Length: 261
Image 1: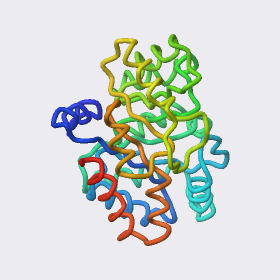
Image 2: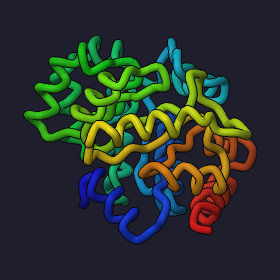
Image 3: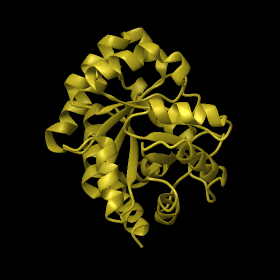
């Protein structure tokens, strides 16, 4: 299995677009989320972003909030994310990155979480509300276990902070396209280009992928024209909500196919 960064580089070297897809673990049930994630990976998603349902998802829009609330109402517990990963990895060798707010990981225990993450077969962790300056314990344990760590870079980040996020991220850097919350938008914020440019200007060799607001193959292609990959979440969950697995597959194939034009 190629590392996340190497896989992204390999795909980009063939002039293809990279598609990273988000889905919450345990939504609406554990078995459903495993089936949905495997369908995504089989239909064109290159890297899976597996979300951890959380009661205070400050960055997430309504679609993801409602999905994670459903998962929690159905009894999802943090430890079950490792079960979901193991089931996915039994049938797919593509990278799985867990996206989690930091508080649940603190409650679980940072070292314990990292060890369970490694054992499950996950590539690493995306931490939307953890900044590099406050990530000492995570930096140490992720180095020890060779886990990817993806930090956020936002339109409000100074050049110094962009450089630090790029330096310390492994797998890819998550460039936020807008200061708003997640959710599909007709027009991507032009600030995304500035964030990507700032990271590239820092001399980083780590891939930079753009997320928040991407909902069509055309947008995936646009984002891939100036970055190393596009991250789609709400549009995929919407597809599942309106038409189940079949519609999810159709949407992912459309995102990937539209990106290749």
